[in-house]
Length: 180
Image (tube, rainbow, N blue to C red; front, top):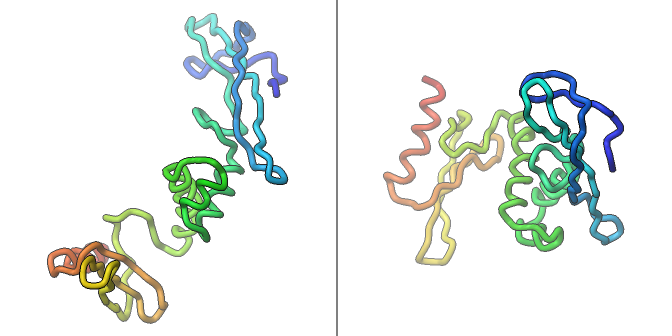
């Protein structure tokens, strides 16, 4: 794909520039089609601003700045990661698990915001009417974690590493800080 506009606005000074001096090929990944990998080939034009004497590249609306995947591919990966393990999604799309985690957070953040929750670990917890607390073992007799639940909504509020008093005592304080 090549842009059709013959001019672009300089991001540094805002002047409309018409002097195109270079074209660079960029390959962006898109949603797979019938099991086959799809790549978009973009020819991004570089312009020269006569006013501020700086070069700039036209904007990329399909993917975003410095992104090598399309928005719809990142959204699909994030939605898949909501219901499947991150490593399975990463191997299916041939990407790294950190990238899948970022896509998941991007998709989950607005969904959680609608319910009044956030992904921030240090953020305040929603105040439950009835709080349930329990511990569970990753490996029986070895590694324990603590879980806090809203018993009315039947919803997990927090999973904390460890089961010692000082590790667990921090969680309700986050809840109290919000009400103060």
